[in-house]
Length: 135
Image 1 (tube, rainbow, N blue to C red):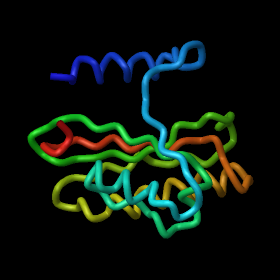
Image 2: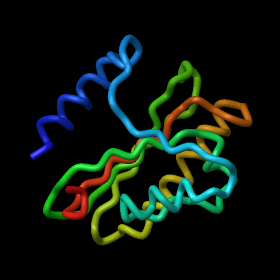
Image 3: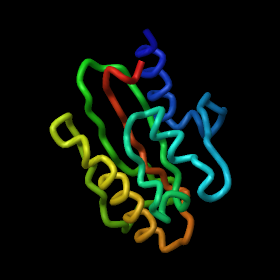
């Protein structure tokens, strides 16, 4: 189905094309406690750290791809210069530890805020989700 399209979009993003043209994506914005995280949690079937004050301090990018088995990865995409910043090891989540995805997202958010020294950061928590629910 759409896997070729997803793969192509990922390659464009990784190559930095989105610095020059607007690539298609959906942005969810709203007032504090207006249900943004709940909406994304319902769409992705993962529990986002919605009660965490860090949710609004750095963006979360959710990528969903179809797969027969559930898996996910959580990493940081630095928008500001990461030189001299402590590395955040990519977290991989499988079906056997699926409930740990919320903690992995929260850890990435906390790491960004700590390393940026800012109240609000441009750096992105990138969450790649695969599973049969991602059609």
